[in-house]
Length: 144
Image 1 (spheres, rainbow, N blue to C red):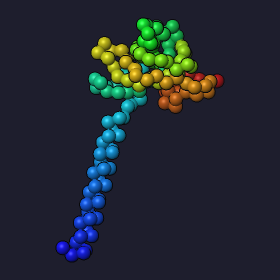
Image 2 (image 1 turned 90 degrees about the vertical axis):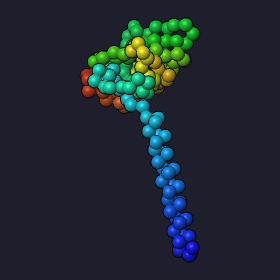
Image 3 (image 1 turned 45 degrees about the vertical axis):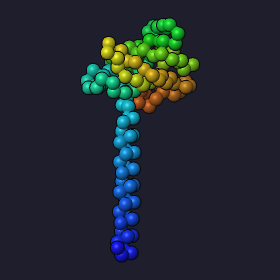
Image 4 (image 1 turned 135 degrees about the vertical axis):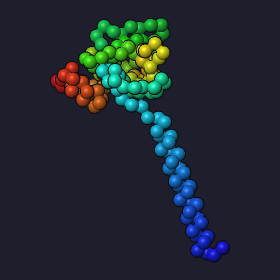
């Protein structure tokens, strides 16, 4: 093997390694994708069982029901639809009725959304962009 052939084989090997590493990275990132939906969007969306999604909207007034331990159920609405959410864990301090919320999880067999994380707005001026844009488009939420 000449010096030129050795150099070419090393370069080709390095390119193959970098290509494989890049492909594996994109594959792993694709598996962690969770899509964002509003309750009204779920009527037309086709969500596979067990698919992780983010669900955003406003916590419905009078819908918070505390169960045993840290189990909580509540309704999330955007004015066009409503989804029952079940969460087992500690809720953020600012979680309350009428406030913006983003939950992440999957749908259970009975149609309720089983969340494994709940995010609430952190001050009076913040709402997740996707939630605010969708609620504004439907005329449910206005800025103060």
